[in-house]
Image 1: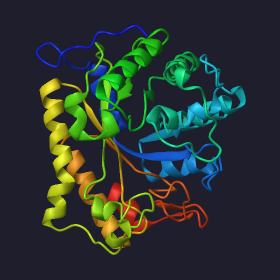
Image 2: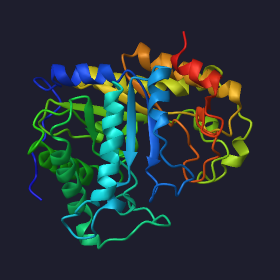
Image 3: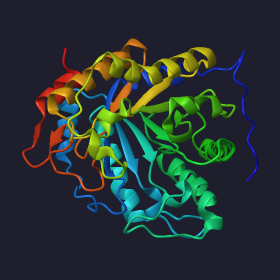
Length: 341
């Protein structure tokens, strides 16, 4: 793939007014991960159109819609999208936009790109086409959505992995494909693993219409307690939040991101934060309020980790997010922590 010039982060660099305005307009958001499963329903959830009204009525202003596009595209280099699936996502995007919600459409869980074992139900492809498919998926998505409102934002990838030079090159190539049909649409790019500590390794393409995303999982002994994919996390069960040391840990990444944003003049978006449903409820609420207040004090829009599945996305209890999909009701302490006074 041809390299795309990266703009040095110094004098003369910075985002457009449109990028800053779009980042601010994302405001208070939430993640919707039902389509991040290999197939809809694999993780116990299927999309319910009523959720869209529920989100809008609660007062959220944006939705981060994660989609495992790699599992709904041909295994060949052209990665031709499954039209029926793509139309389903089209309908969800249009319904969200119709309720005046901003949409950040994100590609997630392309396991081979990330170097992860395949999930059950995930189709393998030849190693030589993995990166080409990523670019071509975005080229197709960009053409497909070119006519849609600027309230639709593209996010290249969730938690990119690997050496920073490889990710910087791939992100630039995918962005170039998007720009063929969407010259000024806002695109979100993340550093490796969406971690603020990797912002220094991020080399942004020469493009003013960008927003940079981080996630924040600190303090991990609280947020990740009891999660089976973190070795030893059972020892953290029952951990409460938030004492002074936890507050410092919670704010450290936000301060790092704010300093990077001030220096390089690109807006930072906190695209995901939350605590496992295995954490004590009152501490989850306290943590969410602290994180929300800390992000907003630093001028960052944010999105809570998930609407229904929360951190247990691979096998979620149906009441594990901030919304109980069985009882069709919010966990009120959590919702108030995010949107209340």
